[in-house]
Length: 495
Image 1 (cartoon, rainbow, N blue to C red):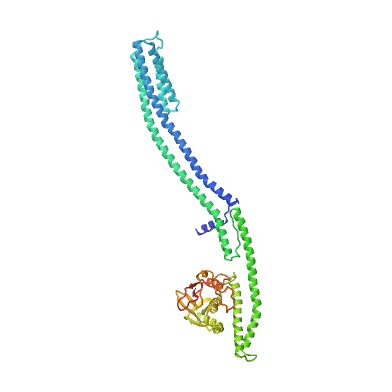
Image 2 (cartoon, rainbow, N blue to C red):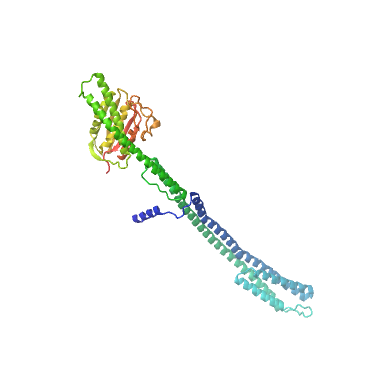
């Protein structure tokens, strides 16, 4: 079953129609094709109704006409018998003419009935009545001089003909009932066929609609997904859209745009790498020089000189952080960026960061409060160090002299929840969703510090996502009125 499903999916991916019309042409063609089953159902319904009408005329109307004509034939026979009997008594020529007239009307009635394409048995009965009546009529002399009184046997034949007419009427009535029953059955069959045709046509139209909607909207959905990839700065996946001609052209344009954006992204990353490496060498020299001055290896410094050297060290540290962020950002967005997991103690990581930021904490007279459990993580030590370093750096940047910064953690359900809090101005609700975007910088930049790159929290988002965790922004409380971030990551990473 899995092999069959795999083949079906492969066929679906490779399936494409040979016609490469525009989206308008596809919409028009799909409408026309979907309409075909419905038009067929309508045409079939009209033809079935017409056929039913003809069948009703043939089966019922004709039989009714013949039955009515048979009643008139019976009346003509009775009138013929009456007129010939009167003629025998009164010997008036007008009565003989009436007799002939009734005979001619009878013949015409039988002829009209036979022209209706009657059932075989009914037609045979009418034909027999016609022959018997003609034989009787020919046996009666039409000349007054040659006329002889008719015997009762001859006159009794009129009664026999009348009986035949009555039998025809009775047979016609029975035939009419049978035809009505047959017509009702035929109507039921037609209705069933119509229901089947309508349902089949509707299902076929629905299937065609689903097919065309899928075929037409699939490239549109794919185009939307490709645009979303470009928005998320995924410039590595080639864009190829199959479908209507104009959507293919749109896909080609998007592919051109992707290649251009990829080229620009490559140049941007190359520029960041170059400028970062170019800055590291003079910054390292500057750091080495300020360290030599602070250690007084080339001579003693007075109090004012020591304060100046300390300011130089802080500035150098800030610049080094900016350059490090540029390099880390280039690594974070690189597709080759992977996790190098190992076991390490969380307190060791935080203590190493405390030592690195000790000079900045002292320069701004900040208190770093750390409350951590003895927890061992299996994660990428260097990446988590960058994450916590950015949180601490931001907290120091936005804190005032004498403020407190807190780092605490707790373990729950094999998950570490690390809380970083400060007493700075906090983060407004308007920019909650923007702070993790690349190069975003808030409006509340402290005037006493160097303006950042806007990459710190963006790097945090990349690395935390790689670890399968998340970063949440908590509302301020009485103790910490500034930014309060909670970092949630699993204690053990999946390989």
